[in-house]
Image (cartoon, rainbow, N blue to C red; front, top):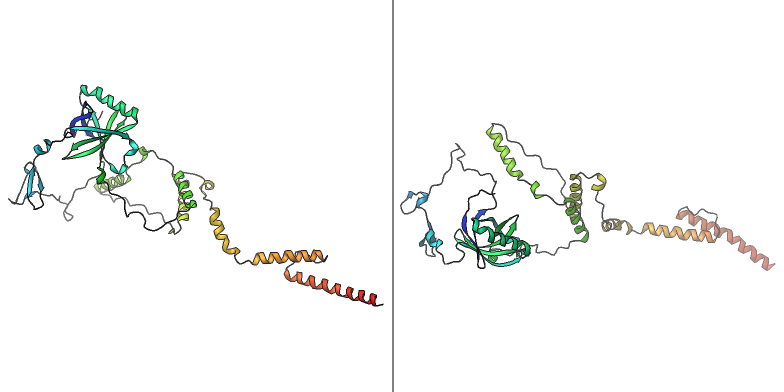
Length: 344
């Protein structure tokens, strides 16, 4: 059971059902806080509050709220003024609707609270609302007033308790206009495939295993200096060449992620994509010298075979020409002898 001081007491209004509750913070900050000091002697820097009219320091009990009008006039506002506002949500968390959880934009999420049942009479209606939320698979949208203004909230079940997330009003969330790249960018399927591979390699993580390494490092520095020792030095950043190619960066990222998970070199290899290989090989084939030479060799082989030449077909283009000239020289005398026989 949480032993946390409540920051607000009131009731949940669920139709005609009223559920007395206490509002407690659901989160806590573990950040390390620093004091401002005078660097020359280490003295604390303190801020004192002075009244402009009397030019004297005032105590916290003498300080109240005031609204500054457009002409600079200060209109005092007391806590009684705020507590007696004509709002049904002044002391009530008024449920106004039930919607699917995916209807809530995460950009609207604000501070989180737990709603604690206040006393025995609240146990039954509290449990009723909790079970109704569970069975409906929905969240409740409510309005409530806290710290001087009306707010929007979302109620959902966490364990066996009801939690409430403060929500920003829709008009408090800025539209992301003008933030996306203003140039046309084409993302290739191969790049998306590598991005998917990187996402699969990184996999999932148990959020319980994540911790604030920055806070731990600051604590080490504080402990070292308190003991009069030199603070620990930050490790040298990993040296890596400047990656200019997005594909190369993705491939390297996948390889590094797999190696960090202890996979062997075979699994860590990222094969080049077929399209990239073709693109690299294409310039070598544009000259056409190899294909032309091959065609000439093939034609020479066919000519030599047709003329029953004794020359070997594996020789080069110059050897083929010599073979062809020798064959022509042999055939020329044959034609002359035939002519002589006919004349005789």
